[in-house]
Length: 500
Image (spheres, helix red, strand yellow):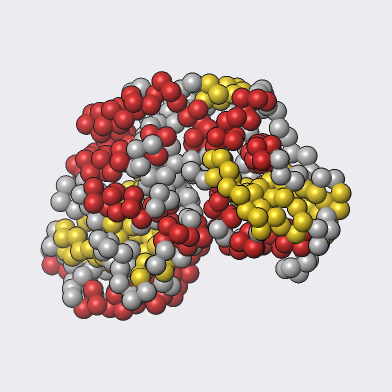
C-alpha cells in the first residue's frame, strides 16, 4: 500500500532536481531589438483610407522602452544600417535629427550601410562623431588594410555576465550603390575573408553569442551563414525584407525588420552560459508593427526633437507642387511613375533618350495633390542630370545589363523588346529611338543621372559617354515638369516589352 505514495514522492524529487539543477538554470535570457533601412523616416506615415498612421521614431522609441522594461539588464538595441538618406527632415539637416533621436534611445551599435556615404565622407564622419554609439564595419578597408577612421569592426556588449560580440558587415555593393567618389581610397572586402578569423579570435577570448550586424541583404545573409561557422545570429538589412519567421541556416538564425521603421524587430533568445551559444530562439512573432494612431503612446523627448526640426520645414514642404489624376506606382521594367520621371528628365534637357534607375525612385504617389515633401521622398538623392553621347550599340549594352538585373532602369524616348529566355547578351530583340529602329553606329543624346553616369548599379557603359554635360538637379527638373504639365496622368505604354 505504501508503494504508490513513495513512487510519487520519488518522481517529484526527480522532477524538482531536473528543474532546479545548475545545468537547467544556466541559461541567460537576452532581448535583441533591431531596425534597418530607416532612411530618415522620423515622422509617421499616414494610413490609407482612414487607417491609422504607422512608423515614426517617437513611437518606436516608446516601444523600445517598453521592451527594455521587460528585460532591463539583458536588452540590446541595434541598427543594420541605411538610417539617414530619404526624407526632407533628415536630408536637409544631413541626418542630424536621426542621430539625435538614436542617441536619446540608447542604441548600442549601428552597422554602416551603403547609403551612409551618400553625402560624402566628410558628412559621414560628422554623423559618426555626433553618435553616442559606435559605427561598425569589419570589411571596409583602405589600400593598406586599415579600417575606416573611427569605425570599429566589432564591439563587445556585456549583459548578465556574457560578452556578446556584435560584428559589423557592409555590402560590397557599396561601391556602385552610392557615388563611387564617396568611398574613394577604400574597398569593401569579401565577408568570407574577414569573418572566420575574427569570429575565432572573439570566441577564443570568451565572447559569445556572436551576432553579425549585416547590411548585405537576405539572400547574401543566407549564403554567409552557409559559408562561415560560428555565427549565432545575423541581424540584417539592405534588402528591405520583413522576415516574419526567423530563417535558420545550420546553427545560424537570420532576422530582418523590413524598412522605413514600419516594424521593430524583437527577438527574445536564451543563451547557454557555458557554451555561450543560442539554445532557444523564437521562430515567429519576431516583428512588432509600429502603429502610430492617436491612442498609441510615444516617447515625449524623442517627439520633441523631431518637432524641433519638422517645424523648420513644415510650411515650405507642405505646399502643393502638382497634381496627378492617377496613382503613380513603381515596379520592375516599365512603370507609369518611371515613365513620368524619365519624361521630365528628357523634357528638361531635350535629349533623345532618358534613363533613370529604379533605385533612385524611392516611393509611390497616390492620386491627387502632390506636395513638395512627397517629391523629396520620391527623389531624395541629390543627383544631377548628366547628358552625353552614346551610340546605338552602347544603348544595347546598357539594356542587356538591364535584362540581367530584373529591370532596374526606367526609360523615355525609346522602345525595347526583351526575350528573357534568350542567352545573356542577346536578350534585346528590338530597339527603337524616337520611333525609328536604332542604328548601332549612330550617336544619340542620352540623359541620365550622375550616379548612373559614374557607373552606379554596375552600368559601367555610361562611363564611355562622350561630350558629357552636367545639368540641373533631377528633383528640380521633375518639379519644373509638374509645374508645367499638371495635372499629369502617365501610363505604361509599351516602352519596355518583356516576352517569356
